[in-house]
Image (cartoon, rainbow, N blue to C red):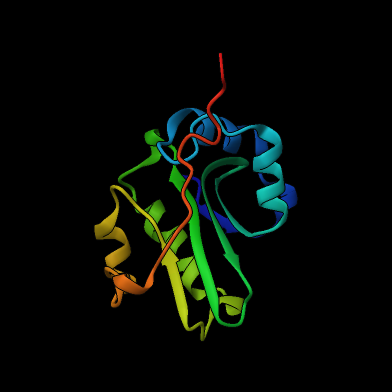
Length: 143
């Protein structure tokens, strides 16, 4: 049995796989162009999860490495879910030395509250102080 390996080396990431999954199979990045995925990876701390040479999982953290981080684009390919790979990926993210001692670590999720609660995530303590600019159709292609 192949062991699950996590790497933060972006050179080994399977960019076509990441783009295909994000653009075709997520509710948060449906239709995202390849160039934007590439640029987002270039400017983030990325975690690739691998079985052998094949990438099966991904997570990306946007951070200043001092006070704030935002966890985004987390996925495990459907055929590999339910085997603990997502939890192992999150363990690696939250153990990363550059992500220690941050004042705020955020994320948005529509369906994985149980997983993230295991890592101390809760609803915002002061939701009245949070604001956002959100453009859900930014990747939509006009006919």
